[in-house]
Image (cartoon, rainbow, N blue to C red):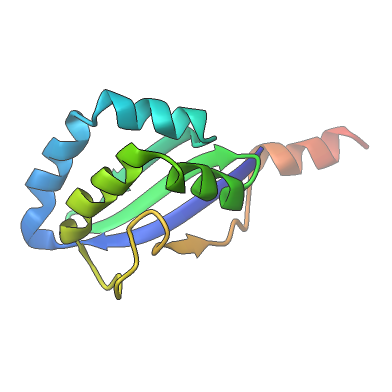
Length: 115
């Protein structure tokens, strides 16, 4: 599995509503994410609206393509787009900035333990 971390910016004036929406994600959306390979998916939100997402997947491109085929995703993205800034017309699920992984404890430990 590949670990993917990404960032988006939520409008700071909409943080409470954004959090409330994520307390009650539609069951169809939850199942679509899982079915599409968005494993161990989590979101973390800072007080200024910085949103960090994390997921594990065999392929980010394949996971995004699978979600693109889900009807519920189009509805969810349309409703959620208004919460974000700096998307420049992109949907939140494809308009994020992917972050480079620079350290992973288990990977480095495995290197030393394998010697």
